[in-house]
Image (tube, rainbow, N blue to C red; front, side):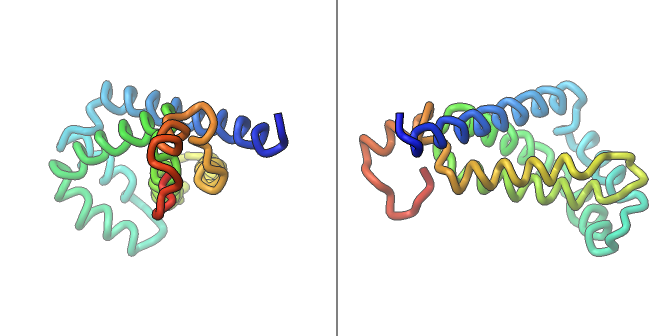
Length: 159
């Protein structure tokens, strides 16, 4: 094995770990009713209560909470999709980029110190997701290897 193959193997392990984290969290959120309109709205209000960034608090209360019937199911599908894509190594760069943005949003949401959340967890998740994107983690142990063989190198580098 050359050094590039070893690096991709390690980065693929990170990709699989992120996929598992997404799927476990998705299952917990599903069981808790977070993806329902009532559950999602309550969660947005919980995050907004006492949030130090006024623009973000306003966004949660005036955009996300009123549109909970739309955003709850959207988040359910997005989290499941990112988890499955990362776990299987399918369109890894695209899924990793989406995961990076998702974790940045979670970092912003949990800046509210009143919630008692250790926000640096999200910094680590942002870093791992960024490494997955930059390292083309689907090219080892992933469907992206098959896509590469079948379709060749894409013009838009999504795998």
